[in-house]
Length: 93
Image 1 (cartoon, helix red, strand yellow):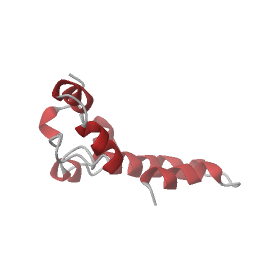
Image 2 (tube, rainbow, N blue to C red):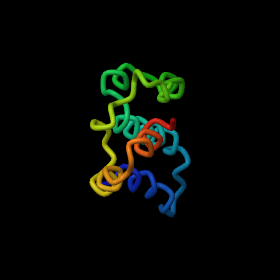
Image 3 (cartoon, rainbow, N blue to C red):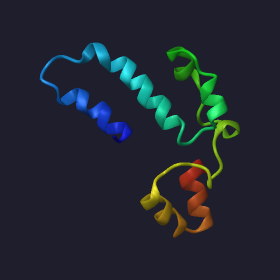
C-alpha cells in the first residue's frame, strides 16, 4: 500500500480516528524522509521531537540526485530536464 493511502484511509473511516492521527503522521513523515535523506540520519531520530526538529533541507543529510526515491514516472520526467532545472527541482537552487 502506498505510504499516503494508509494515512488517507484514516480520514475515510466512519468512526473517529483523531487519536491515531499524530502517530500515523509521524510515521508518514519518517517514511517520506527515507526517500530523500540518508537512512543513517533518519535512524538517529528516536522521538517525534527529534523528527520535527530534523533539518531536512541541510544538503549534508540529503541523498544525491541518483539515490532519491521518487518513482519511475517522476524519474523519467526528471531525466528529460536540463541540468539547471534538474538541480532546481532536487535542491531548490
